[in-house]
Every structure is written in C-alpha cells, then in structure tokens.
Length: 214
Image (cartoon, rainbow, N blue to C red; front, side):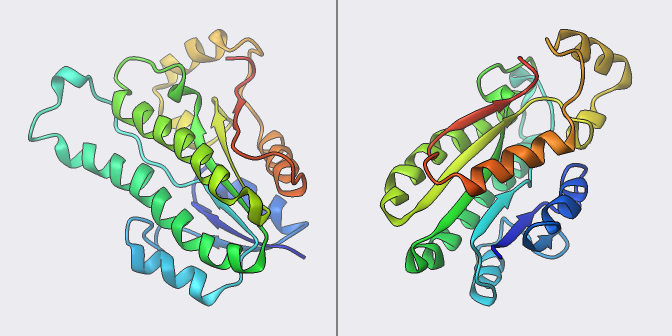
C-alpha cells in the first residue's frame, strides 16, 4: 500500500479528500497546525520521519488586491502569499525528492489554479504564484523522470469547497454561470484525477486543467 502525505488536509478541499484517499492508501494528513510549510526544517522533519511514496500539496493562500493598490502597508499579505504558495512548494518538493530518488519511485501532485492561465482582476500575486507552480512542476518532472518520479500540477477551477466559499455569495452565482459546465467541481472528481496520476506512471510534467471547461 502506497503512503501518501497530504499537506493542507484540514482545508475545505483537503478535509473532504482525506477520507477518500484513506480508502486506498496509507495517508498522513497534515494541517497547518501540524507543520508550517514555509519552515524548511519542519517540512524536512516530515520526510525524515516518514517513508513517503506520494506527496499532495493542497496548501495555499490568497489575498486579493489590485496591483496599483499595493503599498508598504499591504506587503505583509503579499509576502504571505509568496511564502505559502511558492516557498512552501519548494520546501515540500525539495525535501520529498531525497527519499523518492533513493527508492526510485515517487508521485508529486501540486495544486495550481486556472488563474495561472486565466487571471482575473485583483489576483495578480496569487495568479503569479500559481504560474510559478506550473513552471516549477515541468522542471521538477524533467529532472526526475529517469528516477520513476512524476510531478504534475492540477489547475483547479471552482470546486464545491475551499477557496470558492471565500468568494462573496453574490459574485459566486456570476462565476458559476460563466463555467461552461454550469456547476462546481466535486471532491470525487478531484480524487479520481489524483488517483489517476498516482497510478499512471507515464504522465509527468503536466498542468492538468480541472475546471468544467473554463
């Protein structure tokens, strides 16, 4: 049975995904209270203490602001987005690769966003961070494909949980109407995609759009 570590296990999507993963895999679910992904040493401890086959990173942070309104007073939120979305991703991937390369097997699944390719106003920092994740994914895949280690990112659209419900309710209806499928994604559809990537060894370096046609 493969061992999966799920970062962001207590979030809106992570808490729904966790029990589905446990039906098939040995899962270590980690919340932000368990490990701060922005701290290299804390992330390193996770992989020093556990033999991990699959890494899924659902951690993320967004704080909308117009670029022209960024000031020295708002940089705390800007840096928090960069620290969690970019530095956290680097910490997780760089640490998990040590054991994966030794065992000649690994699956790394990083969560990106449709905003990386189709940003909307006020999301410049978040969209830029997710663009980094997508590019980072491709390079990590190239560097490790000969070790049977796959790295892919999921460009998530709007799902029934997570950051979707941080959007004001009045605006959510507009967003749903603009999704070609006219609905939110389900947690089962997210799980099915993750399972496919875990079990399919010939897919790597891909930014997979899961958005109902956005």
